[in-house]
Amino acid sequence: MTTKENYTPQVYDVLYYLSDDDGNEMLDENGNVKLFTNPSGHIGGDCDLAEGIEAEDLNEINNKIIINYEG
Image 1 (cartoon, one colour):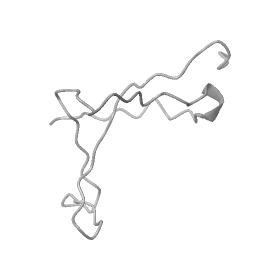
Image 2 (cartoon, one colour):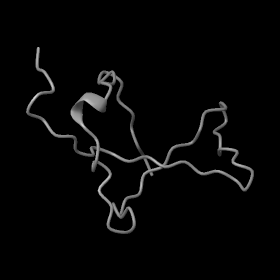
Image 3 (cartoon, one colour):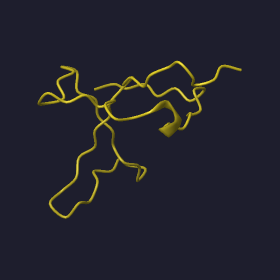
Image 4 (cartoon, one colour):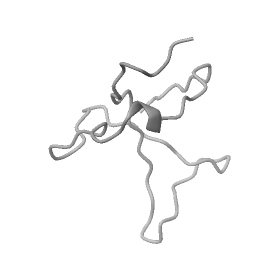
């Protein structure tokens, strides 16, 4: 088993969702929140999403779940 020691956090993917002025998420026909990607990859500003995050702060996800992001 690989441990988190000697690894540093990096950003693999960023997902967005849309909300209205009341904070309600845009939903699909099944009532799930619609997720979006930004094909340009531009996040805005000079920010590092992984800055200040330590490996021990992260929770592993089930990598068997594959989501096909079609913009």
